[in-house]
Amino acid sequence: MDLIETAARWAAAWRERDAAAVAAAVAEFADPDTPEPVGGADLVAHVEAVLTRFPDLALDFAPPADAGDTAVLTWTLAATHRAPYLGMPGTGGAAAVVGADVLTVVDGAVRVRRHFDRVALAASLGHTSRFLPAREDMQEYGVSARTATGRPDYPRVLTFTYLDFRDDVEGPEVDLLSTEVVKSLRASQGFLGVGTFEIGARKYTLTAFDRPESVRAVHARPHQRAMRKFFRSGLCTGAYTSVWTLERESFFLRCPDCQEVVDAGAGKTCACGTTPTPDPLF
Image (cartoon, rainbow, N blue to C red; front, side, top):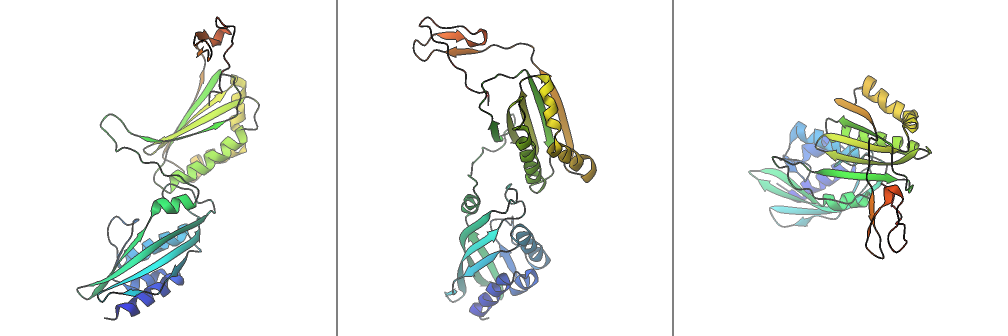
């Protein structure tokens, strides 16, 4: 078997973005996105999934390095990110990463192992990686975000919601809808800030307002679109919404000069005459 000739067909199939030709060129393939090696129809499906995420994918292959029963193809990827990948919604960013395909002959069949750094690929799309501990019996970990207005007012009402999403494709779609809702809220006078957090397959949102009447701002067009997606288009498997009003609060700050703890909620000053200034809640 001429492994260099196979490497040339393999590279040509990727340049043409031809999933069937990619699968026909080799018997087996694996990369960081395949839990196990795939071939045939499964390889076609994998390549099609890659091209859904990156429809204009371009792999610039260097000439293959020949090591007898092994050939190595190094490449540079450039592509536009159009569909969810690794929990990142497809926003049209420019993806870039370098990698290598190692082709070997085993029992007369060509197997390919593709190596690339998914962390570097995510970084090229403006995402910073965070590593979470594994789930424990009593505790599960997630990621969070906040959107602040800079207003120091403390809230008199909170809205608390969550959505249960199915998979890594639906989750980023929820993120995009949530982003549009938050953008609309920032124009609302009574909006103080929002915190979002994701744990497992559930996305939570905690939103702060200055008074109950301001909650009406939630029902802008982006929120209406999200509701239609849930009730009419099958987005997510469950949803919870609620509104919480203030019963009581305590707010203490330490004076940066004399270190005395001051009842800031009651507008008190410390012994040196300083009134500590609160930071915004979010």
